[in-house]
Length: 403
Ligand code: NZQ
Ligand code: ZN
Image (cartoon, rainbow, N blue to C red; front, side):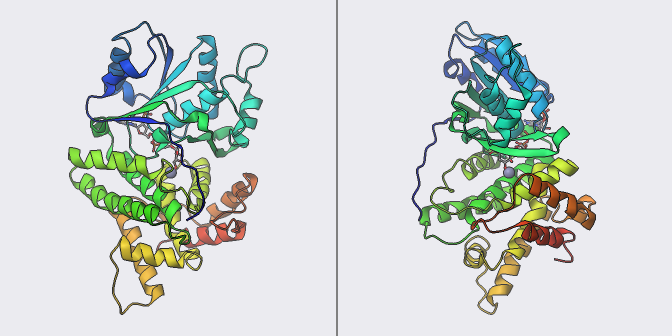
């Protein structure tokens, strides 16, 4: 196991009917900006519940900013940051999924980058994003009410922002972006369309894989934990598909998705975020849902990089899929595990190749160009996978039949 520091200050408040805890969690004299997405928080009544809890005690002043898109847009977020300054906001409350929480983290980090006229500087904020928001040393306090289990944003300090005009979807991370708390009420997930539920299961699955599928460093806790999370997602993903009202399943999916990306299983182990980095370009160029880009790319990453990842692939086959057939050689075991993974994604109704989303080989060149522009040229657990490797991964992903 490698050396590591593990730090996670996020208070998790989990369970049904817990939104009312906001009255204790948000300072009673705060000037609060509630941020939310395209309307689901209003339609489902969650926004009203949040406002009721905030007005239950104290003398908070509450403002609202709606309209944060899935894959939150840089330009929209700067408008929210302007509102922070205009109303002297000292607490951001994100109500939604990864997009709203990520977007609000970015707002919290860039709100102080103002021009002389008091508006947030587009260029400074862009510079901050292209340097992953690493060097920012102040931020507005932030809390979250999670409405879709998927990204883990509720318990980590990272985010992803999309800037359509510049065809860039870029990740950032800063310890100041850890939410002070996140409320996880699994009943809030019952209003999600099936597509979003399945996306969430797949996103969490791939988060685990990116921290697990590298090379062994004898990190027994992290490995066993990761394998358990994968098995829970496989089991509960199929249950929720067939029985969406099952509350026990909803609870387990919600907590699993949080645990998948709160830093725990990634501590002290090598990581490989290739699938996500290629996936971000697919979202930015073709507006494909984040999770769907991952299910398209991951099987090809596993195949293309199977020599580097051989030991972990065999461990994955054995411990997650229970492939113990002694007649199979290593290659056959690995291919079986990849095929099972693809089949799992398909059972959730997710694409596993570019042709599943009506793209063909002509999509590859623009993606490679964008990876180059975004300096994604040394990917993988060894930091040695250049653009030619990403190209081969994408070529394998053109058609699931050809892989
Ligand atoms: O916008 P509204 O109207 O709220 O609708 C949303 C949106 O259309 C809807 N929704 C959310 N909760 C709902 C609901 N509809 C009905 N009932 C509810 N309870 O679901 C749609 C998707 O929401 P979004 O927030 O975009 O989904 P998700 O949580 O999957 O977030 C995806 C974003 O997170 C980033 C992705 O790149 C993407 O931009 N990620 C963030 C990470 C992180 N912070 O660590 C890691 C991930 O790898 C990921 O990259
Ligand atoms: Zn993800």
